[in-house]
Length: 212
Image (cartoon, rainbow, N blue to C red; front, top):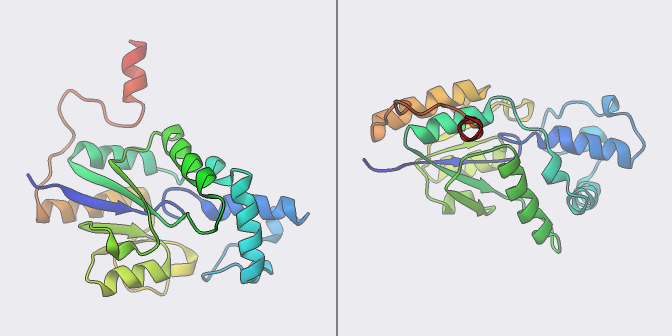
């Protein structure tokens, strides 16, 4: 069987960057998190931040290891484990090397976060130009990434967020829906197997095995 490669974005798909950044900004600017509304279009002007403000606050958040402590989006880990067990090649693709002089913190905190949440993956790519990374299917939330991937002829699942509702592409509002769509598309392209008999599903199976 040929490998079916799933390109998985992190922020806004696996990790809840918006909530983590909301907490940081609220603390930094001495505001209540409730004063920072859900983002309905790309950017943070709804929080009163221009591009320079965002870069300054994001850079500071990175040096304070925000990436290591981001909340995980519900259902992500177990869905990715089931897909991996079915033969899907998980390729994590993220554009976190966004600002200079913070790459060591970004890379180490990203790997620590993936390990902490037991995310299965075979490749980890730090790259902004995502069409340059080969995958059979991508899951992303950022409108510019989705547009670029689609225009390059790639299949993309939009992970539903308020700021990407105008996009007409195939959409998933939960990791359960992501799993269903990926399974369907992979089955059509290469054929995949369901959960391997005798092996527990999910991220906790190794720790369960050790405790027996």
